[in-house]
Image (cartoon, rainbow, N blue to C red; front, side, top):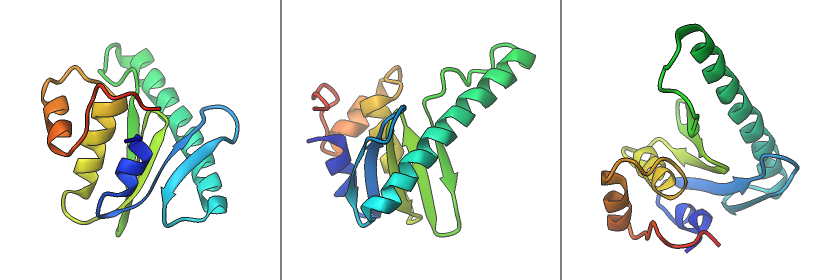
Length: 134
């Protein structure tokens, strides 16, 4: 199952999608309009660039911070949270554990797989880390 459809089907996920690092291509699953997701895809590109820039600036002053390479970011609001890993994003409500599950899936599928626990957790949630994304 494609990661966007898998995330979009999770309870507590309002929308999930994929955005292009360059250009306006995006796809999504969830309760948002295409116009809103277009704005979200632009926000994702900008926030990703900012996260990379900030980690490079920090590294230039302090040396190895462990922040690079940047894999993603999270913004948590009063009722909603937004996260992006790689070029995938999810908007979730702040119910207990929803953001944790989404981040685990994103990290297992497109993030850092060095932690042996992630593939096991992802498999328990119904995913196959070796499955092709397309």
